[in-house]
Length: 616
Image (cartoon, rainbow, N blue to C red; front, top):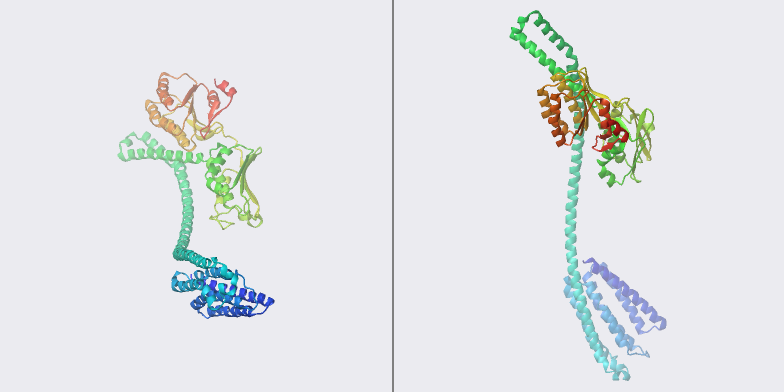
């Protein structure tokens, strides 16, 4: 607040000095007389104010400036009227009052209300100058009524001098009010600035603390990531060992257990009294229990291994939407243009693996986009007689394949370090592609584009993929119609019957196949206990897993028991909206299922009038 009046004092002094020197020069061009010399003298006097300011006499210089202005104005007015042979006009007594009125703006500009004594002292001096303006002129013999007889007849002059005093008072009051308001605003502004500076300092401290916390958090995340990778590596190792152990237990122990059961059987035949021996009886019971456990374990291992070998029909358009919807936030926020061109509309392969491959490639395209151009991603497919090619192309940072291509698909290899990543994405993609029997290649140019091409072979047989294949029965999957098929090869016992149905249920938990085909032609009759098990355990499970259509094949008319069992279940089927129909051949059943096929995503596809006619 103190700096502004000091600057104004210097500037007003500079302006006054310039004007006085200019006026002295102009008067001198006409005639160097008392008036021009007086103005020149005042110019030199005003030059002293900046000198006082530079010496630190701030208050004195401001007060001297305020008091010197009315003296200067009245002095010039008097001098202009005592010059010999100079014509004195009536307006000269009014013009200097106007100048004096204008000069009265200076004190409120140079003094705020914290210097109110100096402010009112200066304004009082101006007030006296207005009041005694004519008295000073009369005392020096140049009064209005003294200079010319003509002026003596101007009655309004006396009134005008008091009008000037009133104008000064009005102007001064307005200036004081304005100055007071301005000072209050400046005080509040100073307080707000001080508070803002304090808050900014606190914010800077908080930012510094947040930065330190973020750095600490990043360090912990990096450590946790390293630990997670180590844990994953260890988990993969243990998982592989567990799979190998499971395979060993389920397959390699079958021979010794079979031999043990054979020995027990031979011993019983050769010496029937051995069964009376508790120890031998426990050996026989334990051998049978161990054999059953190993068979169950083998069935589970075989089913789990086969599930991830099963190919199903996948619509590229649908899969692309599923993958990109999971990254929709990044796509919208970064303004990525997504293009698709599916010349090959479908593929038969393992859906979780293909989804993982596409997710990794699309996320890489988003992660390594260029900051200098509008990003775009293109997902396209095409095919030939043997292969289906999936391509993902972006216009991002690109890679130098000449120097980096050899390490592109290696574990823990990274080529851009401005984003988070551990260099395992492309390694996993390559492993998954190769596990599907395919191959992967890349084309790229630095700061231009990157394109990955996934080539997957067309499977030879997708309409009869075995999930279980035993002498007594089989479970298969038809990917072309999304049908799980169950076929018995002969009369089955309870264990064989339940093994087949449990295999189908395990597969359905993974693939949610909505269509079932049951071929009962060679199954034979089942016990009432098995019928109850199907009614209370199997059917409710299939309903929960999404069964919608059931085709039953029976070469002969259902016997009375089977017919009654079917009639009991029809109400349950109708309750859950399950369509059931009985056919005399698998061919007719497949045509009926093809008539209105329910796909894996729940949509319904009608195959056409030809298939409908054959089904009927």
